[in-house]
Length: 46
Image (cartoon, rainbow, N blue to C red):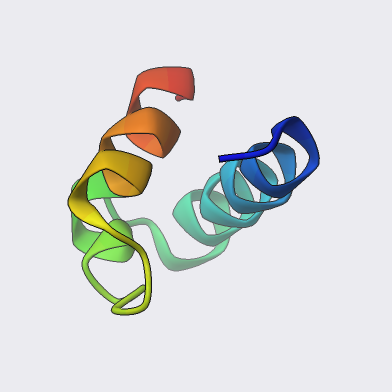
């Protein structure tokens, strides 16, 4: 995943974690278009 795309997803998940009081794992499953490796990459940055 490109760096800019990774940054966007990481920031989006962080905002949703604060606003919705959910875990990153709960949020990331809702991004159905991402591959498993992309999801792992995002979670690793959090």
